Image (cartoon, helix red, strand yellow):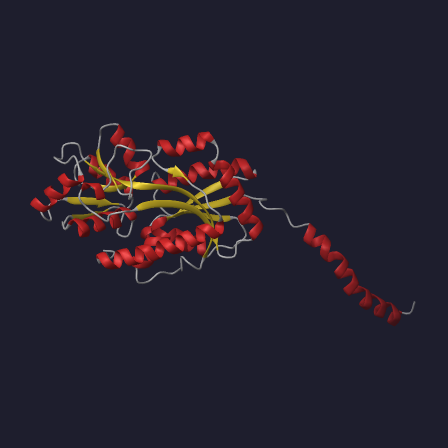
Length: 329
């Protein structure tokens, strides 16, 4: 074959060769997951999100055969970790153990956010729910919400309440209580709920509206006194504990939740695999017992149901916080 004819034949063959090679390249893509998965936790180590995220991460590791590595990004009421997740590639290798504050509360408290909770994430499933627990030091002369309200009215501006930061659910819970009960306490902000509880144990602050997994062990040990739960009805895990509403604050209701999300655009096969594993994991008796020992109830729903749940919860908090006039410090 002459050189010119050889060149023409090669040129004609090249597209065919590329087409033939394409299926081979696609089939060579590794199946998910083929490397470690990052689990962003947007709150302080030792807190509820950290504890629940690590429990879930270990079980996902066992299920998928790839390690789930915790990436702690606390700060700004969970917005730092949410930013990290929102900007990550939607390839299934970055997930976030989400919290109610990031999706239901922050949009109504902060005028400026660098991500959109309703747009920039892929919902996978609800993970757990729990009321907050109202706790005080044992030597404070308070054994109920009625007692707390009476003391706060008798000493306006003299009781301190600690939180893991302005904008956290503990902050919102305490602000709503003050508004509905008609009392005034002083907010003391810490870089994490655990640090706030340390000062509650030392009686440097007098009350906390705290996540169950943090406060319940201390209450069970007698180091703190639990006086109420923040849910609309009594918790099945603490059936003898009255609600804040029962303590003379009608209309008070606040329930915390945790869930699993990824960046926007997470592939459907990844979402479906993770969802099916979460349903299986939460059906395990040892997981249910572990969660319940922390004071939380395991929960799952479909990605579509979780998306609707978050949207409706954000709308509910928008109305609630506006009516109460609650703003971040």
